[in-house]
Image 1 (tube, helix red, strand yellow):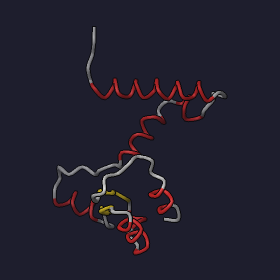
Image 2: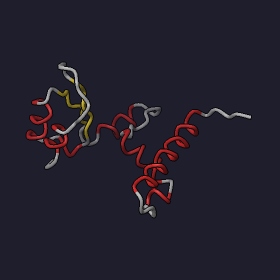
Image 3: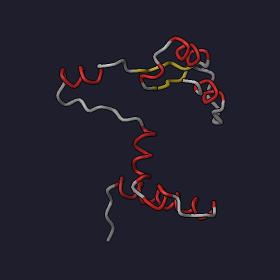
Image 4: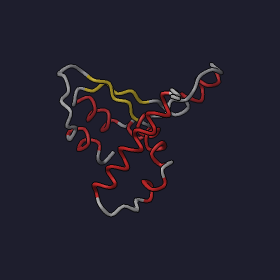
Length: 114
């Protein structure tokens, strides 16, 4: 919570003047976080404790939603060379990040050539 306002203020992509949706975890349920989110024209979407568990009980086909950032970190963490960062040069590390992203995208498309 301590970095929420700074994080929202430092977004470098221009946002339209209309309200935007913002998904957050349970750590942002308090009034100060809600106020910070709403003051910056975001609509907060925060699941309360037990909501996913209850929804899973009510609907057996319901799958818990992992946040995009967490999933992306998980995909990149499968590349041990990136996880430990053996590379000394920034250019080399960045090139490996691009290669990993290309491999991830290729695997997710499910297209097999040849």
